[in-house]
Length: 84
Image (cartoon, rainbow, N blue to C red; front, side):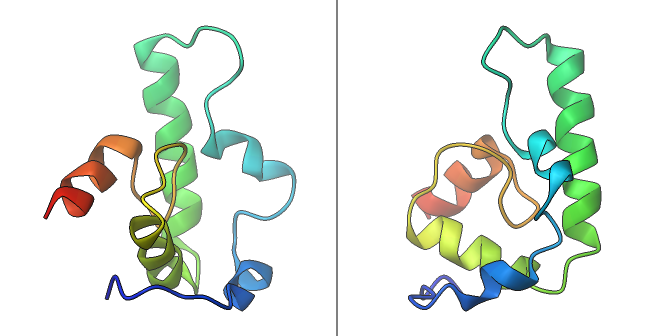
């Protein structure tokens, strides 16, 4: 794990594609803590149903992705993985 996925062909199989993708990133306006928690919970629920969640997380950690929910993890959760 965390070796990268250069092809990123897995994107087409991601459960987050489509209109539900809006919950994976914070809005352009201020977001309250409870709103962020709700949004992230919704996004992670989608990730839990995804067949490519491991590849997504691997790619996000490899690229040091700092925004949004990727592979079922938040920015803070990925920072822990990246710092290892």
